[in-house]
Image (cartoon, rainbow, N blue to C red; front, top):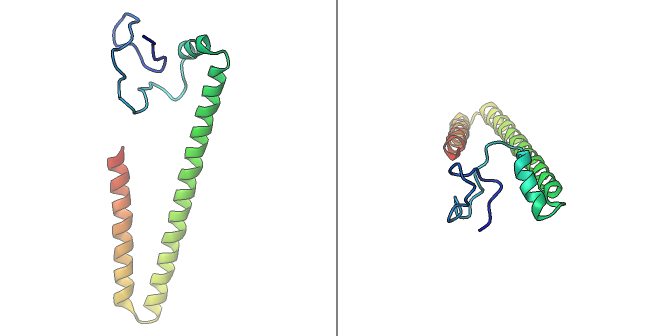
Length: 120
């Protein structure tokens, strides 16, 4: 039996659990940074493994940040474009279409926030 260094032991003994905790999902982590004890267990397997794990974790967090930033910026650009089209339609005397467009935008933004909140 091997001990998963990313998972806290379920009891006071160092016995490994009979099966993986989440079967395919990421293991339970108490913090973003692995503890020195966990990294030491990885070092026992391979001396280069702790450095690779820290680098991979740093890269994953960096990628997550940039994807989130790109998503927010594209959403901002889309919303500003829709507001500009709304203003254009109002100036052209097409208030009904402008209100429909604005209503769709508000509903879309609300559903995005609700989905993001439920996802957590």
